[in-house]
Length: 415
Image (cartoon, rainbow, N blue to C red):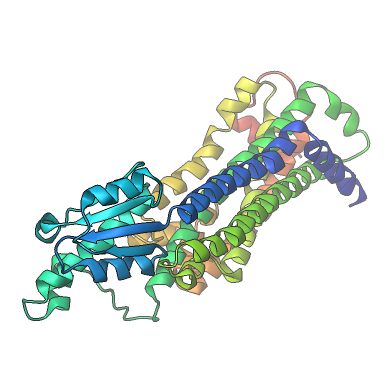
């Protein structure tokens, strides 16, 4: 194992020291955090600076309720007497006494249309909040004369499907959180297995083309060399993914308090429940490790079979299809389930990382199927590593034409 450790350490250090790794792993997330943070900071500062507004109610019926609704979402509203002329309000805006004022008139009562008068147009967030407050207030006023205002209002705003589970009870937030976690996890697994598997293939192919491997195998067996490469690239991948997850967690830690402080209408408690717990994250790590080693063995074998980049691109197509097919099948149902046969297809070891993980976190399949998929992946990993090791042992020193399927079978037998 000391030889494997030497190869692992070399592969890991060589990759984490490259400029591309540093830029992709550290600089890009930091840049994204900076841009998101700067944008949020400027937006919050603009909202904080311009929250003193006036409200003119020419109807005499909506002012107090609309002002209360706007104050509930963090605005300071001055309810102006309707006897004050609009020319006076325009003067106050032009002389920067107030930033803007909202005007409610008879058209507001009829259609929910109102005016926002100021030097600058309101932002998207402010527009949406004000429209919601005004329309809801008008609806409540007009429906209050029709008996059960609450019921009529619910009917006018649209029906709502309420799901009642006959199995294990699950809240709507848990269901949405499971869907989001499953979709993000499936995409992350697809991307990492494809990306880091290609890293292994390129590493094997480069050493084979440069004839470096002919010197290396004189002091280490080909199978240990392949294992060291896979472990080294995998360690680099875990480092990179860990940094990305840490950056995402940092964005969440910074974002939730900012939302709580500046958008009182948002229920931060419900928002925090959408974040994945330790269980889904731990399961994601297990699927990542098994899936990575499973596909990296295949990519390493492909690299050992080929002598040129063009041959490698053609030879890796079947391996890529093993990733693309389950990804397409999974996208047909974001919730993780769909046709019954898809749940059984998710037990296929090469499909399990992308198809079984979303089903597990959303609760669409029983846990015995999840456990079975992990056992089958582990068994497939052992078999794939055995076959790939034999192909690697012969192919790593072969040059010239890419071997046929019959030749590959002979390599496996002779090795």
